[in-house]
Length: 498
Image (cartoon, rainbow, N blue to C red; front, side):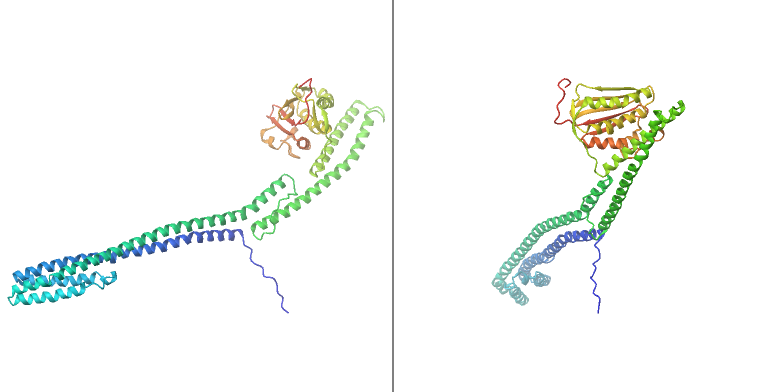
């Protein structure tokens, strides 16, 4: 019992596809060229015919006419003079007429039915008769006989004219045939060339689509993955049996692995954040009780240590909350509770949250509202206050030394509400500005590198979810200004301020 396995055809690689297309295009373009060469060969044959046969026949006809005229003249002269030299020239001229007649190829021009051959023979016979009479001293009889056969030269001239006409007609016909072939060849070659170019363009376009379409789809899928979206939804062609199919399958495998790693990371962050909350809350509770004296009065240095512990616990709580928010954002479970938000209440809450910190760090803190700012916006007040303005101000106070200033200014613009958070702190190097809002990204070393690198990423996500935008302008050593733009479509400005 034999095992019949299916025949596997070799994969048509991209290189083979391109070579096949180039070969097909070359064949298409070679067709008109070969046809044109064939037509040019036909025109060349006609040119050779005109140059060789017709031209030679014309020359022979001219020589025949000249030889007849010379024979006529010499024959009359011989009758009068009886000179032997003239006799020899006369016979030579008659012989030349026969040779010229043979060179003219008269039968090829359809003049074989003419009597020129017979006429030439009769002229030869008459010449020998005249020679005989002259040799016998009968010049008068020779003269009379010449008058009788004189019409033979006229007949020969008419036959020569007929031959010349036939040669001219066939030459004209050959010329017209060459012109017709050339014109038809030009037209046919142009049509064939246009058709070949059209087919070549269609073939080239199809091949371009065949190669570039999967590359474009793969590029789109890669850009989605680069943005953190592992569910690309792009129909990459993994079924192809060429290099592009191999690349698509490798990319799909890589994307699956990255998605799994991202899921494991999100799961780890979520579980770790949840597990950290309990000990952090316990530590925070005990430090609060110690600070309130529930376990006895603390000495000054002990109280200072407890306050330091509380500050670190609060920093840990902030980082854990940011990790939770980030994991929710990456899992697309980040939600907003949007409602009408009064700008004055939003800014007042921010001011209360940071007044104590400003006094503690001896930093001038100011919040101002321009009359052009809208009275209300539509959004999530808690997230705008904590994740956006809270993170921006926390960074501003962190990187501003005592004696510096931090300000918040709200204005209105055609784009909506603009909130600018400015400080006179360390500033940000230009090289870091493009990635300042990336997750886990920290600018430089030292104090700037402190923290988790999540606050600005979360702030940007919250602003984007509100349909707004956030940018930064800064120079190292000259502070930084963050610009937050929030749309206010459908909201009305305060009649007292707008």
